[in-house]
Length: 227
Ligand SMILES: C[S@@+](CC[C@H](N)C(=O)[O-])C[C@H]1O[C@@H](n2cnc3c(N)ncnc32)[C@H](O)[C@@H]1O
Image (tube, rainbow, N blue to C red; front, side):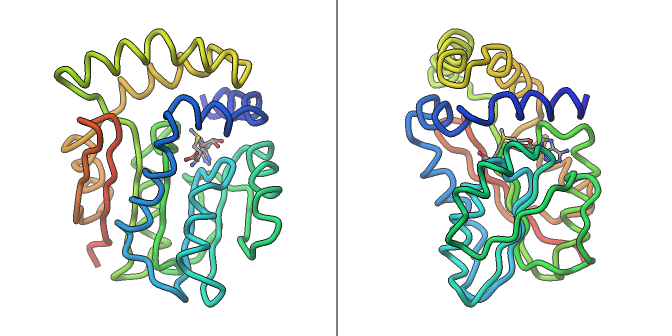
């Protein structure tokens, strides 16, 4: 499965940012701002963004920690990391190839560990969450941003949009309709809200907040280590 996911993201990497901007109707910037805010990150801190893709969340953290801090970011697709590297050229962000389930970082070495729209794609999300907890310093903060399954009127509209326009636009903007069908299918199947918070607890984390945006289209979860 991992190999299929990696080659899918490698395929869509050239058009990923364009598709992201259009498919989210520009809201992805706001989601990232909220994620950085939710982390409570401070200038001078050391942060790690997993499954960073083209690096947008890492760039947002780089602004927040200022030149006094450090931002590390990793992904298992070299093509996605290549796009991130171009965007992070004038920053001190450290980019590395790594699988979120086997992180090459020391225990307790980051103040904030984040993952946006990545955890759903990992073969074993529980293992990745445990790894996030391992590399987080005691008292540090984990931030997860992921799609949910909106209900009610917002849900009906979103599901219609997701089933029809997303694969169509994804096909045009990123050249891969299948990848955007996968996005819709995987978001529908992945636990959200309290069910995902329970998964975080099973990984040994203490969930501190859960924000539901646009009726549940997106969730932002924050957690700390238990010890
Ligand atoms: C939907 S993109 C999200 C990228 C970025 N975080 C964002 O918010 O735009 C998912 C990313 O997860 C990466 N990914 C999926 N499984 C992974 C794994 N096991 N380890 C590391 N990266 C992974 C993919 O290569 C891809 O770049």
